[in-house]
Length: 118
Image (cartoon, rainbow, N blue to C red):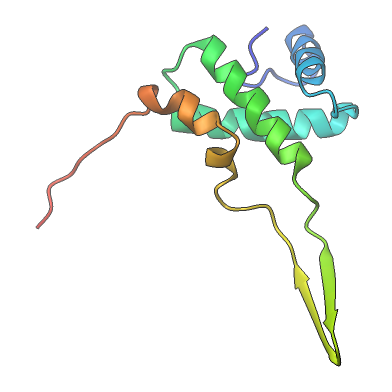
């Protein structure tokens, strides 16, 4: 069953997609989280390279979901140095699509457009 585009809720294809995603991303146990991450990853991949073969898009979804799953939650963290306390929110990097390896898999199917300048 294809992971991208993400199958509709309540379908047999969605159940199979969730099972495939959980098999490949071993730390992903929760169906609700798997569905949310899978849907988000598939949407990004469909926008980036809709013409890529299904097997490549599936692998890109798996890599991107795995990367997002292992990223630390966006929690407030505190660092103390002497009398100075610094609190900040640690977010996953904006380049998570690139760092996961998903973008590299899809790059040959990315349609690049040029425009007239001036």
